[in-house]
Length: 307
Image (cartoon, helix red, strand yellow):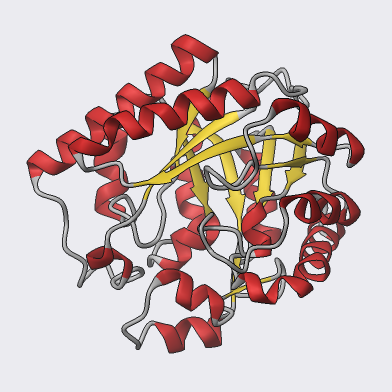
């Protein structure tokens, strides 16, 4: 088993590129390097500029590669498709011109990946983590979202050679067990892989270890988070958006929460997982002064148990 640990700008509170409190992207890359990362995600569309020379200069300065780009947007609405395709083109045009990452022979598909996340629906955002309360898409709307995912994944692969991976995310329309199961039926592995996130699975009432095991043959990429159980139990009793719960500290450094990463390490050996794991810890960007400390603690903990 060969695993490489990477980072993501969300550890610095970067989820909405229009948030006025975001730290400069150059600082995020600098601190990611200081923490010991060799790879990092691009973050949400519009945060890191699409200027190849400018981005390459900062990556080289910090000895970093880009592991993935992300479309974090409404994948359901028909009128959004052209905007989503423009994101595919912009993101893939950038990440395919940057230096490549480590490649393991046992990986089915190599980074950089295009992570597809459905997002932007108030009615689901406020029901994140509540499978018994959240409304589900109609059959028509679900079919349209699946069609959009296929179109985006095929565009990324056929035009750029970039593998798309679908990320179930708390607060979107691909979150809960029934939705992930239907996704796996509707999107064949030949079209797109899966990026499972331990924190989102736990947040949404699923067992991360069991899902990693059950989806091993569909798994191209993994995100690691940890959850502060006390804060989690509090926000589950409130009418609260997902990222407002993150601003309250529901996500904590790896090893300081409820998720058993020693057990997950043993599982990843069993399923022979190779490739990248990206650490995430969403927060309010106004609290990004502690990001370097937290990601450093997460990396140190994972290394201490054998990652």
